[in-house]
Image (cartoon, rainbow, N blue to C red; front, top):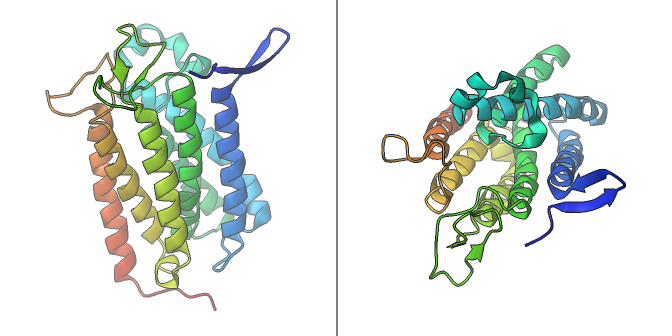
Length: 263
């Protein structure tokens, strides 16, 4: 496995996990700048620069609160001071997603930017952050998969107390939620019939992420404090189902509207 510490500067240890978050945000920001200046040009360069701070806060605050509320509320009720200790780990994609939605709505209203059109741009860039985030999970040997002793590419993770060969489920997620979803959205962005129907790309992102997450959860080890809820599904699957349904709703709404080609 890769050492989680990228390099050290005296007593300061720089971890790959932190570098992955930074890379995801910066590359995502660059991509948002590029898409935001293309027709319908709703998010020009300076606005994209301003939104980077809002997006960062949405990801970090939403991701942390989502983890606290969805995955470990009992623990944090007993240890409330640890809610702010983000460096100890514990982030939820679904919480971060809700945080970014809030940031898009607030930022769009403040600057009078069409919220659905802006959301489409952010949706296209989101898989960049997901890709780097899942690679960070892999390097940290966290959120690994279920035992798979007969799988040729199974791996033994140093953080696994059982020392079993397991699915590298973080890499499955990086491939599906990151690379594949990025390519799909990038291709659809180039189709005027899709791009000029605001909300379409938001819908595709939500459906694509939700389906990917539901599938990968069958290979991912459930969170030990939760296991299978109702004896059937993991928390990740349960949170992804309404996301898929909402994505279908966004697509249906977008395609009931006429195309909004730029003047």
